[in-house]
Length: 228
Image 1: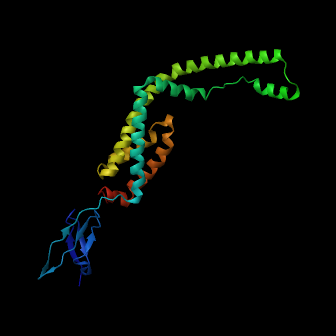
Image 2 (image 1 turned 90 degrees about the horizontal axis):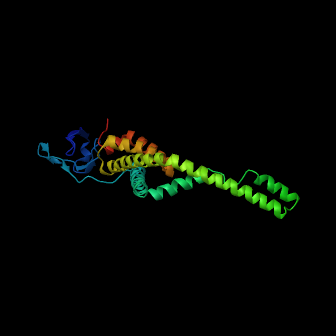
């Protein structure tokens, strides 16, 4: 017997259904929603019966879904905390900058070479200590200057991070709720910009690339009911 044409009870898409599938549970090729195929009824056929849609998340979309949600929450919490606690933000910036400033005078390498040949006397040790103290004092002054220069930028970065974290979180929600295809894309963009000073942008970049590839795939488009 030839195929019969059945309209999906979920999305209305016309399907050519082989007669051997009559009465079985099948899935729409357009929206992937399940329904029970019609059965023979006299000279015609019964109507297809819509069945509950599965809310499961395809494996390809699970990583970006979880990744965007986690990155978004982390970014919102951390940036919000630093904005609400300026002292904590200052300490974080200070610790970051201190790692970029040398803590020992450049002469220290020469002293090690000299010590291997001859043990320094008390006067030499005192001289070295004075040089080291002066160097560290200058380093602390340099750190304070850099802190004063970088704190305004750090605060602006926190607000920027708060915005991108919110966008990242909304992108994760779009994946979770299967709504907002464009928001899901924007969430991936936000993940690449999310809190770069806290090392999240590398992970965010991986999640974002995965998410974009998933979104433009046939499976991702069907997941958001945007199949070509």
